[in-house]
Length: 136
Image (cartoon, rainbow, N blue to C red; front, side, top):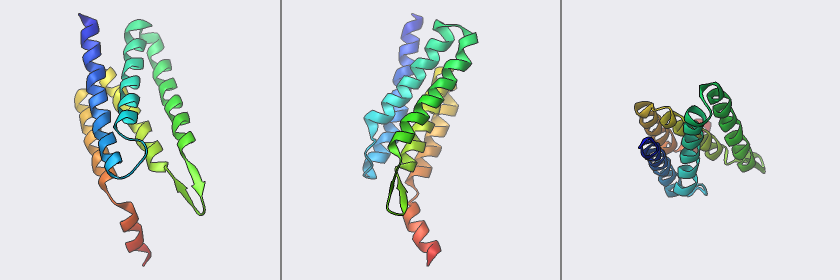
């Protein structure tokens, strides 16, 4: 029965990730609902496994490796094009989505939903328009 609860946690995390991904897809970004849902679901599953499969002593180490692994994934997305950097926000978004998944995995649901809403707010800001206004 406990495994059904864990599965529900992964579903919640995938839903939160997909919500973020839909916003990114609407903005024309390559990483969309599937990518974000997979990151949040995977981070949640790793967290659940670390806490309940390997014991609390391993929890911090596994969570830390999730952060490093997602950082590596994000680094692969970032590249220079001319005078500017591309996909930096996508990499940061995936890294933060992994944190949302970790939060769901440790049952911090309000925190996970709150951070998802903060992410949506931040990602909705058109920083290119803001940069043009401040330069001129």
